Length: 539
Image 1 (cartoon, helix red, strand yellow):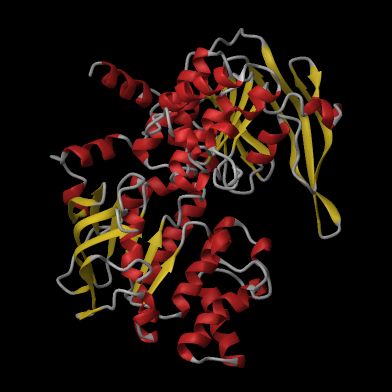
Image 2: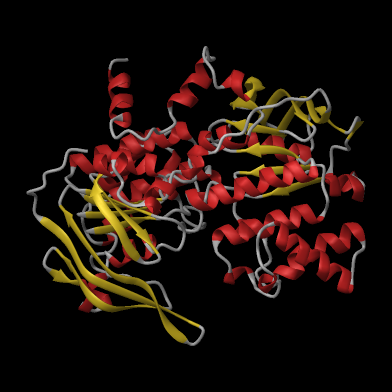
């Protein structure tokens, strides 16, 4: 990023303190943090889950979530004191001079309204332009953000586009009024690496073109290195260190900062086996009668090993998982498990067939009943598949909690009382409770910070060693692929492009698409995105 250190200060936060109400008392979340942001500057906020990144980012807009309060300090935006400004006055700034791009796009859109109407709503409401001008501008932004069919995609409803596409529409919405300040809160976490490159390039272009200041919140240091002029590291609501991006990458002063890219240090030696536990043989699959998604794919999963499915959004990775589990019957081909052809439909499978293939989903929040305790969530498959009840069930749940490195005190907790990493561990324990041969992991670490990711991956690998479980691991994170895989399957537009041992697939020469995928993985180099942009400009 090109940043002028003499530019006018747009935002100044001094000794900001924020409390959250829990257990019938106010507890500190942000503990006296300072923040200065100049026009045209991008500040990266990094740290693990619970560090206070999102809380501080929202406070920069003078906003706190329900149950939180600003208990001290000052927030001055363009000469205005947001900490003491009435909310009705702040609302005039939100959506126009200040905008916010959330991590979960799906939860941020009204399902009853078309995308383009939501994209331009704030701009038209505040009279920044006419409806026609706003629509034309939105289509230009859709083009810059590499959305398919940018002239017409705005006519769709939120459920009619992929998660990655919805994230880019939300970015267009935030950019539409040309704000002075944008808060990017994990905006590319849900995107595959090829899409992420397009979005990062587009966001940088808009920020630079309109001299917009931004706070970029993320747990991925390689991503923030491409966007930020300066990086601030938070932990437990306190500042650990702040420095210019290049200095932070080359000379971090604190051990905690060095630990934030720990997943990139994980590496599993690739092994293979001729003993195949599961195979997908010549499968075609479609949604409805016309939307064909999988085209004659064949994949083998060796017993006790990990095969990673990689590819961009819409490549068919999750659809392949749905075929394996019987949620989407194949049009052609078959799934063979332990030498037997599985019934195509879930309802036709035996209880034992269901038990032996389990699935862990990306969003642990939506995968658990919020009204059930941890003991009930883990205990249900024990009772359903194994007939275990009473004290024996409780004892086995406690043993599973021990296996996933959580204490017995979690037994009576509800999902809402758990962190993101703890929720995902509970989902892993629930899958383990069935005592499966195969677990399908669908983007299970993509929403987690680097430190929590490492813990989850270490847990999965340990359970594989101890139980001999086979993993079909769906991900768009190449660092995770490097860490956990034995074999890799690369998918594009519903077809298998390449498959083989990790060492073979990750080593050149590559098929064209595999090369593109690997070249799109952000590196710990602030010039990486610039080099990508220059290469594309040269054709």
